[in-house]
Length: 217
Length: 244
Image 1 (cartoon, chains in turn blue, cyan):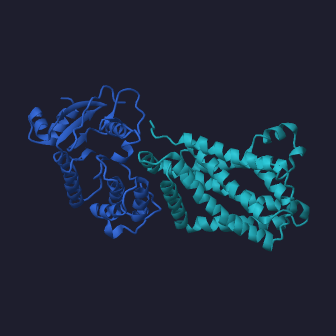
Image 2 (cartoon, chains in turn green, purple):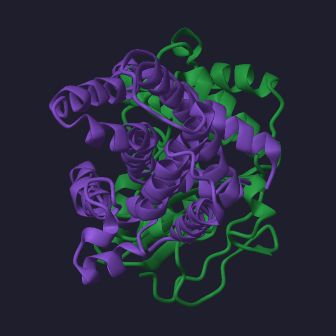
């Protein structure tokens, strides 16, 4: 799937993963989390082989489609996952507040809007205070205010020394990352800070830089 | 494995089931209703009803828990919650035993209600103790759960999962000896039935109903327990941390 991808993600920063649909973003993220069967090659996270038991406490993953129980309330979902992660029960209130779901916490997940459900799924990932957060398009379907607030949280998590890997399609989000990785057909076509990528493609606009690199011109 | 996670899983599964009032009502109402139907269908053959009445009380939980677990586990697989759990510090037995505890509890309630109707209202005859029938019903429910869990790995949609009922359950019911004693079946079918878990589940129930507790009864119980363990191990093998 990803021939010859070699990549090091630095700790304590937000790395953005960009690339057209089908370029291998999700496969790369799943390999890092350790849920993808890797044919060959090494994936290491925090100095350990990806997917080892110890990392299951320290790495959290949010899939594109929200993976929460539709027939439980937001709070019941968090209550269950908090017990699995052995997170203190105060974390439930903290994460509900962090994703702004206080008014919806007693509603069944299946009755939430798409954006609310993604936030419930994100809240589960935040419960265990992981060192590494892998987020597959976490802000799809969210309104601009929520997107801004979530990105402020991502920044503050990185400032606390957490490592974030976020895939996105939205260029103003890419601009908020410290480092960007551009994938195309399972290959890395460019890496660098947003400013460096603009410079490399001689554009002022990240979208133009992305198009130039993604189309290989 | 951790008791905390196992218990949390059992509570979560029970909560999901409690939310679904219609399913709960069906679990509790359908077995007594079917048993009542059997009684009147066999009104002119009371000896047949006497033979299959008590075993039916103990076989309903097997069939229903099989179906419910297949669908519940299929949902875990298709909605991504299973993948999420597999990326967390949760041991596979935590998930399996969590489901087992929750469904055994539901089966205990179901078998008690069905037993109360059968032995209290419908005068289903049993020479052996009623609690023996209820205990076997719970064991059978766990067997149904374990089989459903394992077979759910082979379906990718709820349509397919439901089809396992006629494909997997009906033949076993037919061959178990419930409808026709096994020694009156063609030799080939009798030999096949030797390898099916329902055969032993039915025989154990029939022996309790006849108060015929002998070595063969304990052998039947041992086979049922063995099948539960085997299905759970096979089920655990279908829970993969890594998928393509």
